[in-house]
Amino acid sequence: MNEESEYIKAVGSTIVKSTIVVCMTIVCCFALENCSLNPETIKNCELSCDAFGARMEYVTHSKCQCADKQLLSASPSESIWVLPRK
Image (tube, rainbow, N blue to C red; front, side):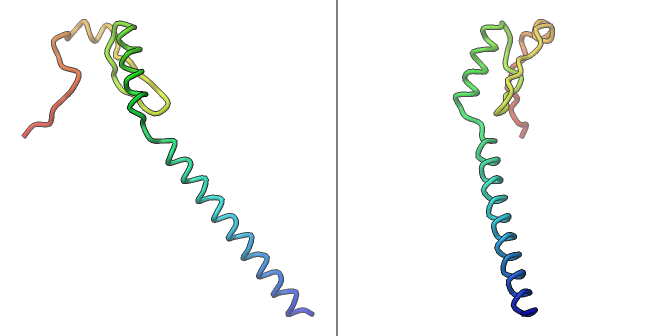
């Protein structure tokens, strides 16, 4: 009876561990999917900053940051996009 009890515990433990791994994998997949940046989000951020009278500083999947108006007035001729140097 002792061997049978240990076998049942081992099988149960394996099932629980496998279930936890599958659930954690699913959660990680959903977390990674939600991190993607939608082009519509970028467009909405640009429109919002334009309406505010500023330029978009950066945008993430959860935040839109417009540049400070005082910084814009200090250097109005600078481009908002930086090109890599060769």
